[in-house]
Length: 446
Image (cartoon, rainbow, N blue to C red):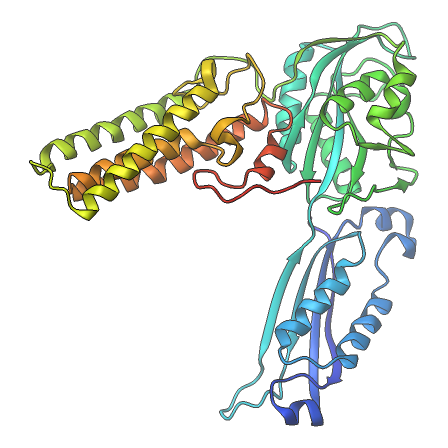
């Protein structure tokens, strides 16, 4: 979000402070406020209702700060930020509260507290279509570009569709991507148009052939409230989306509760069932291929670290092993690691691979230990090496285990980027299962 509105130096005489005399006598406070929001609509319409009335906002901030009594200016800043974020158009707020008359017994100019608060991202559904050139390659490239506008939540299958309206032309390939993004609707539209232009889109004929067509279909804010926009440039939800099976079906696949006016995508399906749409494959953000060069390097690095661990254990191991409390602890950790590793292997089955690239031959795994940790096989491996190092009192091997744990954390992070583009719903899974290598509990998304 690059647009912002700033109000600086709002003067308020108020009664905030820890000391009794501060609350009794009061003092001057100043508030600076910067709002991050999409100002595209206001720039086009020149209408106050399309932006924030900063006069009313400044007055509301003044009433809030003057009307309450808090101990800390941190609390003052937090409440001002909450007030600013009450407007759903505001994506973020930066608040600085000045206390120039603070009771400090040495010379000073000012005391300030600054808080930065961001709204939960918007969730948007973007429809992708192409009927010129290498349609599938175009959709895949566009999917990667759309994913770069936020956090990719889900990707639908590819659907082939006969063109509706316009001149005679080739059939379309269509898909839907769901992203969480800090961008507002107009900002997001601008980015989608840029992606279209980069793909060679030419707007010659209405409903004519298109190298790439990207439509912002629907959007909800961080609280799940549908965003409704009706301007000359943009209408959200898309006015014809609910009438098009090539939009409704892929959207119902990845976001069935997406709002399309008064109904959800799933509820709109029966109305478009007669339209000819054929599912033809997966719209992954990258085409199926063997391991990438990055993946090969990561696997070689992992093998190297495991070999280093083995060498250090061989050089450092103390024999015979004595049954000390640390050795018992190490044995328990190693056995626990073996159990987690084996359990993870059983849950993955044919999906097990040393390479980060996920398989495309089945459903996303969320059984066994994957209910609590996103990469439990790595967790098990780390525990095995940690336990062996402790049992054998091999300090350098223990250090190598720590190095491997850091490496696996980054490898898992890389894997998740690939998983986001392969399995629809992986983004929501990542939100439900909070721990990458360590169980951090599950979160309900309802």
